[in-house]
Image (cartoon, rainbow, N blue to C red):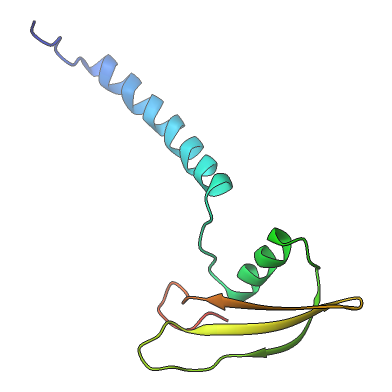
Length: 99
């Protein structure tokens, strides 16, 4: 069987459906998947939320530099009498270390 020819009305309807579905799909992916964060502060907040710790006060932060390794930033966080240690790995969009 031959395919029906694509008419301008069909093309316009398909474009409208794609324009609606694409943002909805991207929003669903952002909610479901573990997405990268653009700043170390955002990654730290997401880590605290994921492990139900905090929002804590950052006691110390340090960033050891190792050749050939992605930048790492370590945090020691206090929430009341509890302390946590976590690391945030990655770079910002520009390729500079995340701040």
